[in-house]
Length: 389
View 1 (spheres, rainbow, N blue to C red):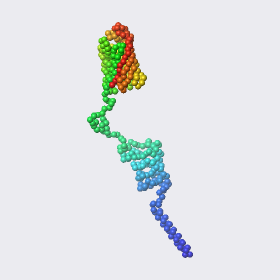
View 2: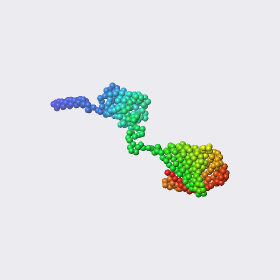
View 3: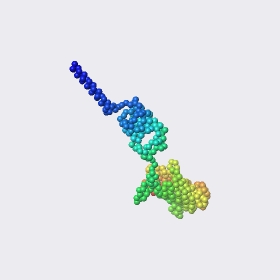
View 4: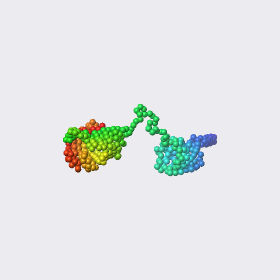
């Protein structure tokens, strides 16, 4: 009997100890489970402003009627949350970390962004690489009154850059730099300077210019010099204003003087490259006595190698009326043809050549030349040089 009573006494003490331990654990917050399931809870009237949401698992929660206006969302992990029915109209988004959020199914059509103050927001470090903007509906957003003055970008101030791009820095002792296209240049081209053995004369054609790519002042002279007897010089020299008309064609207009007729004239012409790289020029001269002269010429460079070039060229001369004193008849008067074989040296700036030339009178001009005891047809070997600088 004593042993039985002692056992009952021990069992009673053990029960009291266990009961006291249960109450103690219930009173200690550290023993509360961290993964409380709140899917069945009504959060509509819960005040969670002082709660720490950083480690809360709210994936099963219904956020449709939650009032989160006083919540601190700065450290919340909402990567697994369903935001499709969340009312975030009163939320403070300035410190929210949305890098892991899935915005694909978020309906923000009812959100009022008009009064959102984003001037203090730092957009530079926002990570939106994981956001899906494909299905975002922002048709109902009001951006009219958004204050983005603190964001990067916007209009530059009126004095951001000086007109000459110097930003107030002096150019130094060399002065302001000049673009190559604005710099006037000059050039001289001697298309031919050769001797015709059968005619005993020197033929030449020289062009010189000064100016820019948009406009130039050009001087041109062509003719022949007799090397025997009276050493007669026949030349046609012009001073013209040169301007591009299109990609392949240039226009000329100026004055000219013809020593053969001893008359001045107004000149206008078109010079350029026809299809298949055929050099073409057409010039018209209006003399002081009303005579009109038309010169037509064409040439082509056929490259045998990088240095050897064959250049055939032809020319026609026509007049508007008869001038028997100078051996001129109305219509076409002269036809010239020449073929030259050139070899380009010194960076192709110097090209000696040999060739064959042919000249014939046309129409009534043949009869006028016969009356003056001049040859009607002539051909000659020629040798000379072509150069430019």
